[in-house]
Length: 170
Ligand SMILES: NC(=O)c1ccc[n+]([C@@H]2O[C@H](COP(=O)([O-])OP(=O)(O)OC[C@H]3O[C@@H](n4cnc5c(N)ncnc54)[C@H](OP(=O)(O)O)[C@@H]3O)[C@@H](O)[C@H]2O)c1
Image (tube, rainbow, N blue to C red):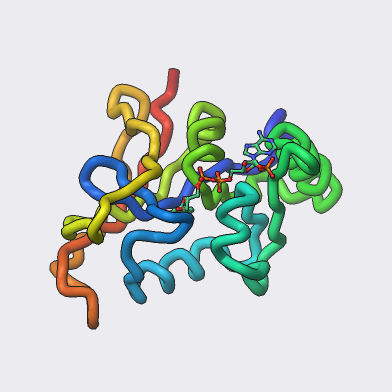
């Protein structure tokens, strides 16, 4: 059966205790377990990102359909319309499309999203702190549906948790 929205729209991010996302167009921490988690979830799917995040990555991420938003190019609405058309073409109901940042794109997409994959990190911030933040996760809108707590990584010495949130039914 075709649905109005033939994909699940998911935001995926790694954030600090106050929603800290990045500084100087880079991530705040590099956690190898989180990179693996990100790769496992997004592989084979479309990933949508802002132009600055794309520049920070430096190259398209392999094995994924990389869609980059720019006001001199593709808008978020156009990117999502494109996904809708392609998902319908592939007759794939409920494919998953990932918004991978950054702050400006998360702010616009959170009200459209069905699911959030958030890695919550309990670690000190690098000197200078963060200059971009994830929007507030309102627990009256979002329900935690999955959690995996890690006391530390193999080389990252602080706790972090992989948490999934689903939008509550209206
Ligand atoms: N912690 C995490 O999980 C995570 C994930 C991703 C990124 N980050 C961090 O986030 C920071 C980057 O975030 P940011 O907010 O500065 O930038 P961003 O969201 O990556 O990119 C912003 C740019 O995207 C384009 N854009 C945004 N909305 C658009 C729309 N509706 N239509 C068309 N184009 C649109 C514009 O490009 P033009 O200027 O070309 O028009 C805008 O300047 C970096 O520090 C990065 O490391 C963190």
